Length: 106
Image (tube, rainbow, N blue to C red; front, top):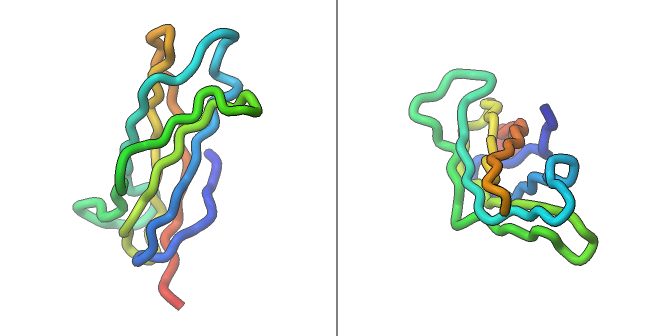
């Protein structure tokens, strides 16, 4: 699992999932959604949340197939698993899960 750069609890941070290896020739991403779960630590309910709608660039000028999402909140010291579910133009659903660590404010 890829680990994104950590964030502070009070900041809104954008993270991007890239699906270049999963996308076939002539295929692109048509929609996407994100879910968040606690990976390390204890927290209920989960306070790391999406902020706004996902931004899909598929393909962009360089041929990349990306989905970006802003995340806000989170509890210091907790690691979260962020999963992006992307639906392709062929109706396939592909997933990317990454870790987001929330740091103690400094």
